[in-house]
View 1: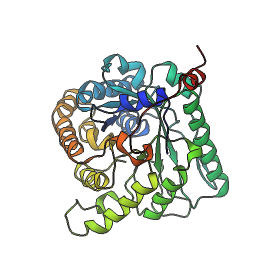
View 2 (view 1 turned 135 degrees about the horizontal axis):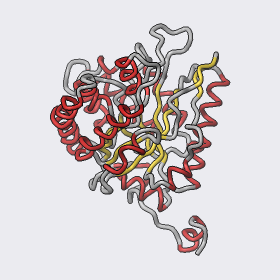
View 3 (view 1 turned 180 degrees about the vertical axis):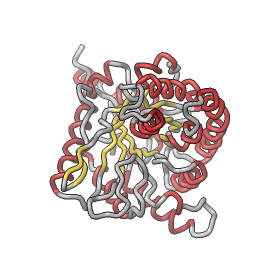
View 4 (view 1 turned 45 degrees about the vertical axis):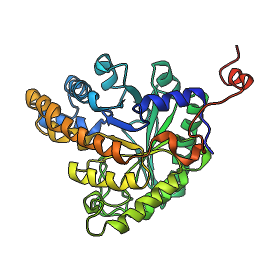
Length: 347
């Protein structure tokens, strides 16, 4: 059974809509936004102003259909937080977009001089962390990733803020299709995704919400009811069972149609919503630096797509507080007076 502190319960409610469903938009991407802008300008680094301006534009145009938005401390928060409605949940990124590639696998780290404590102090409703993970990576990398995750989970418990944890498998040195991009790994194996979820569902990591990639290659996922959908559904069902708590889907660069197909399976398997970025706004971003065209497409096609996703979510997703991990009464906070005083420093 999972128990929530008062702070975690409040943060979970802030991320969701009034029905307990997560309709969350990711604006925290760094390489997927910085790299195309830098390429356009023919520079090693993207101009800060353009990256920050695009993130602010995403907040302005997409927050209306979002229950919460995921922002990074480098660009989105400094330039765009003043545009974020106080009625929307605020999720803040902790992990650095630069990871260490070692002989035994990838190693993640926090952004320099950034922490769970600082996210809590700035008013964040939840902490988001992405960890690259391959169950068949070397022992050294595996242990580093486990220690990294547990350290953050402990801090989230200490500061009573939800821990939203994202997992991505990645190519090892001997794999084909090498890439360091933040995209779905080609020819990934479902077993790798499932084993990763199983590991981090252990209670010592303190994860409150999983943000998961499709266990099947996105372009190979039929919509529910289409040919071959039953076998794909079994894999999604197993992922949901292993998660054992509220979970949402990430888009990992999937196209609009592919991501919607993925969501039909995720909702049948018990997902509580989505936390997606590029499936929503990448088509508009492809027109950079035509700012008027990007704004028009975000306000038009992107918002229309979100409304379609939200209709699907309303009709098929499981409210986060109804997951069986919280017991028959659902998620709630019922401390004794003494335990509440102890948890929050005494008064």
